[in-house]
Structures are given as structure tokens and as C-alpha cells.
Length: 106
Image (cartoon, rainbow, N blue to C red; front, side, top):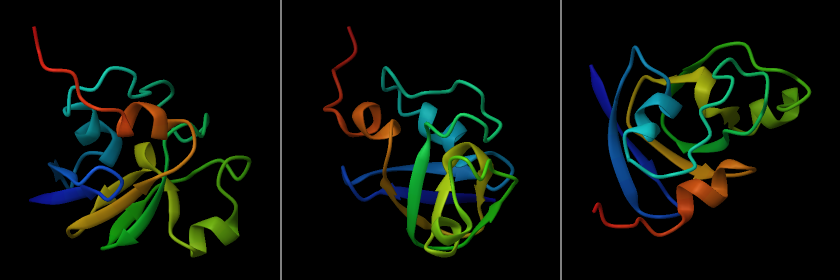
């Protein structure tokens, strides 16, 4: 089942299947610079705050996301899968790529 993911910072949304990570869905927006590095929760670049909705989270490095942050809704986009419509705020290194104006395709 696919769920809508809204990026609150830009107002953009995309569909993400509940079997894929929120980061994988975000990559389909076609923005240059979306960090797809480790995709395993170890680098911390894809940090987001889940403002609304439900998601399932996989293991994340405590070096990048503390238990307190997890309780407050912060997660790594590569380690969460949507279970409902999600609203996200982008934080950390992902913000520059995810929130820059989109350039039209050539």
C-alpha cells in the first residue's frame, strides 16, 4: 500500500510504498544531492522529524539519533517505512538538497 509523504518545508509530496524507506521514495523527486549514501542508518545525513503520521522504524545509530530524539519523532529517512500519510520536516544534512528549489529538466 502506498502512502503520501508531505515535506512540510517545501509543501511537496510524493507516494511511498510501505515496503520501501521514506528516503527511497524521496529520491524519486529527482532532486540533485539527495544523500543516498549508506542507506543503513549509520551516517545520519538523512535525519527528519516526523511531524504527523505513523511509521515503522528500523535500527538507527544512537550516534546520530538519540533515544530522546526518537521519542520526539526524529528518525533517519533511510530507516523508516510509512504506515500512514506522513508529514516530515527535514533536519540536518538532508535539508540543503531536499529544500532547494527544483530545477526544471533539460
